[in-house]
Length: 113
Image (cartoon, rainbow, N blue to C red; front, side, top):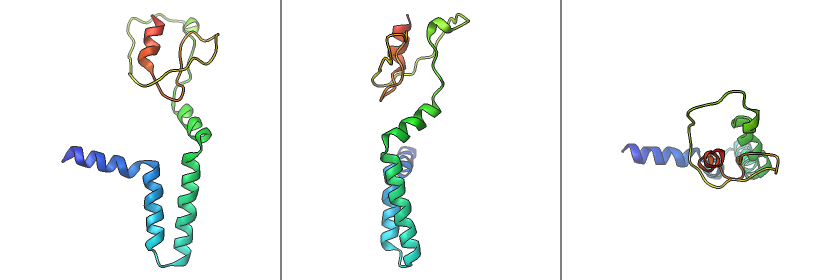
């Protein structure tokens, strides 16, 4: 039961699902003003979530600002590794990979060795 509930909630909070729900509600509502408002909201939502620049800015706002390993003041004995997808190296001056289109902290920790 918990598995089904978690998958159902995951589907409902996905951005494209929110667009579909708003669009279906606008289709079934008889009131013209509410229908127009829901259609405007749904297509505005679709434009916002399909804009990769805005989505990347939101992801970067969520992530911690990265530092080069040479700039660290303290030596750490233990690190936490979160596995993920692909990596990208932003420039030749960076001594570690960063989050590109996908996050990959496992490879980042391997490169840190």
